[in-house]
View (cartoon, rainbow, N blue to C red):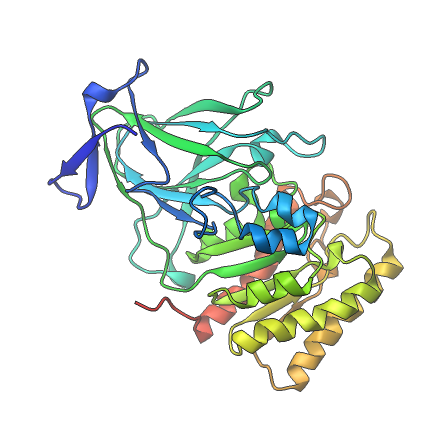
Length: 378
């Protein structure tokens, strides 16, 4: 990593990129796992794999799909501050995921947002604005370099979103020599929201990472989150249920209808997962939803059976006095004049579909935040 030294000027805890360490393009490079960067959305207990989403032993004890997908960096973010007019990344990946039905700007690249310097948080004033995507070469195999021009030098708080469907081994951020780099904005002081579910939860098929529904909700409400979407592999097993129950969280979103092997299997696991989370978190918002793609490739009769399972869990919760259990009927999420335009393949949402999911789920979280969420213990 390039050397840097403290800046005693206007902004506290900032560094200046030393011009003498610039490369041939004029960039000074910083390892994103080191100060002043803050990483979010990752499991922090394994220094050998800093960009994973849960422990290896938990993933391997759950199923092989979770073991693979735990290394895919969906929901991972790095936050920092800089006044550089350019931002570059150079990174290493063991492979770049390239699907026929998903843009590489979503599966294998990063996108960048400027965070508002607001003083309010939560439902009253958060927001971020898209600046650009770091696009890989379609022929890249083990990493890539990419750069963005931000037009002019300006003080900015930034959030860099990681790829939805590719592992990351190493990531460095490049800024202009002589520019300042420092700590990014902190989220509002709520514990993270945990999202558990299928490939849709992981982010298929958003055109870039910042457009998966969790990321949209996070920007709107200024809340941290953990994406535990595991493509084809979220089945509510006891191992993953017990692990998630032990996580610090302010809310839990349950969305694994699609990956349950059958309606009967969903019935065996859905209520059990609710109970496991409630044992450790008796008062947090627990949001459960049925799958939204009910008119395309899904078997409608099977969809109805699965929806009944989710509704039964919700009724059980409410009948037992749980007034912080919430249910979202997936059939209503895409409804409207453009309901046939919300997926790329009849199953996985496109950006329009994810916008509608963010509206539906975010609306419930916003209401829950008015009641108060669990905050970080200082």
